[in-house]
Image (cartoon, rainbow, N blue to C red):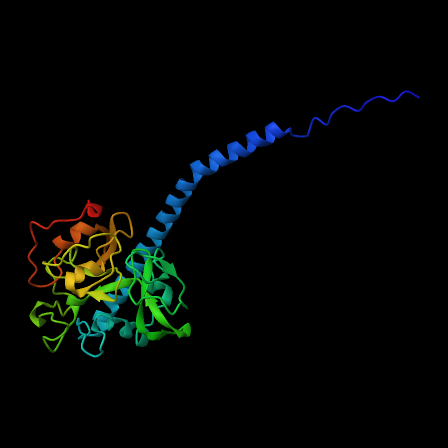
Length: 271
């Protein structure tokens, strides 16, 4: 009986065809990854804006329940973050609302921003553009760890009974929710590397994005960063939320006696 050779399997790929397919996949991946990254960034930004809008409702409710007054800011040894006690005690917020979705990891030591875990004993107290800071109180969902956040309060909103709140003059505080004459421009709550900030018009802009915070350079550096685009998301007294470029923070009315500075030399990263 005569045997005939079987025809080659036409469904099989040759080595060259496999290499071509792999090359196409690699090219498509390279093209799509930036778009996917941008889409993810937009989703995080949208969540951050939603968080701040929810905080706007919470701050309004707090003022309504306290005769339009803010807390006095003199009850703890860490007054920049004293505001959180009102919301962990009487107005409980879920810990996720304390965190911008772009800044949930802890910050590692060093001048540059590095990411580390919440259990790392070397994590620093302050955060950065993409990292969070801590409070000296336990996280209610993980009592062995400190409560963390990446939003902060305009500390000029406090209603103090003394001048001595970290050097901030008592008469410059807003004290009441209804006082600011420009509520759509007056900062209330925002993306931050620290628990709160009481900026001064003379504060020095950070040399680079995520520079470690220091009181010497002024408290504007606690939030002057590029977390969303070239700036931060901010809740204003009228409950609106907007993105504010880092360099434009100096033009906002932070306290009662604020005068917009002129001639500030901004570093290149703020342009």
